[in-house]
Length: 227
Ligand SMILES: *Cc1c(COP(=O)(O)O)cnc(C)c1O
Image 1: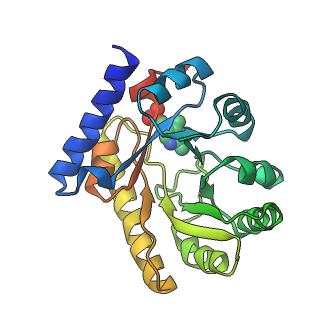
Image 2: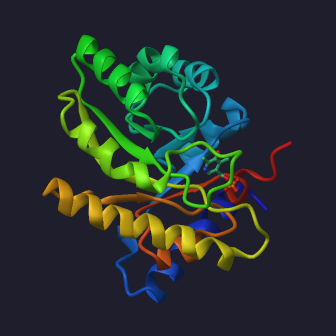
């Protein structure tokens, strides 16, 4: 199948899931995950209409942004960020999905201040309790979001999670419900809306949209299996 056909197929899946959930089709943003994908293929995908690209490593993304630029593209950091790369991340990414500690938030805030930027971020939550996963614990979201609210160069837009790796997409539902509930609690605690829920990937995007995802991060359905 051609890249264009794959993109169309993913858009149809999103539209069908929105319809099933009684949500407008434009309420979910497709973040295309381009990690390990060569620049030429990404260029083709951009020509095919993709606007939001997700990378999980600062180093790999740097080379791609250098080549592809940022005209009409929003770059998303979806992988774990080390504090010593926060400065580069601030220069590169429109939205950082993976803030999971106060120390990291403080360093991003400091670097954003130096760059004269207000950095948009999400808090990554480990909703499934798997030890291998990054993300703060669900019980840490309240404290972390309160700390972030006091950092003037950060703008918290919502929460992100990665569903459990399981062949059955239904097994991700409890994690997505938990993330939505945490978002609801956090926004009433902060007294302002947190509109974004970044959840759902190739295998479980329908379940995520059913539970309120506003961004789905899709790699292999568009670009094929990664090695
Ligand atoms: C790789 C990756 C994705 C995309 O996964 P697919 O199953 O290929 O769609 C989404 N989110 C994160 C954080 C990833 O690292």
